[in-house]
Image (cartoon, rainbow, N blue to C red; front, side):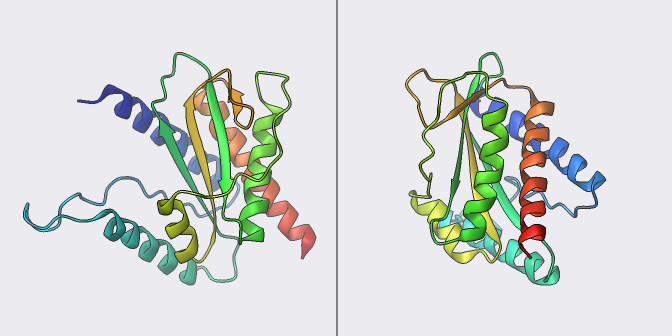
Length: 190
């Protein structure tokens, strides 16, 4: 049993539930996709590859996107890497460099976290873009704009990540504020 993974999953699941509840209070329809897609299909001899797993996520997201056509829709992926709730966390927000909506979405979320950072250091404002193959695969194949939020234990040498306290309720509230800011920006733009 990998206790780090369990802490990661518990933190992300709690944040996702709180975030969904907060957004639904404001009239949003929220879908949470977790790790429920099985590692194996039908029996132990047929293994689902990572690309098949991501393909299933893309299929589900795109189907819901088309069902809700014309409405504000975004995908936020939250990845936790070895997070423990005992210390501060570093947060980074990424986007796909060929998506203006995804970049604006990421910037709105990042700005809320910067306002609530526990340090006064200035962060690089460089664009944090998808570089890993899995994120690029998702971004190129999903219809809605997508951003990625990564969490890890705080590190002193990180200039591009934002240090925050690991408070699940506040964390979910900050994400919610970032999403609502993005929605308002889009409404003002249109």
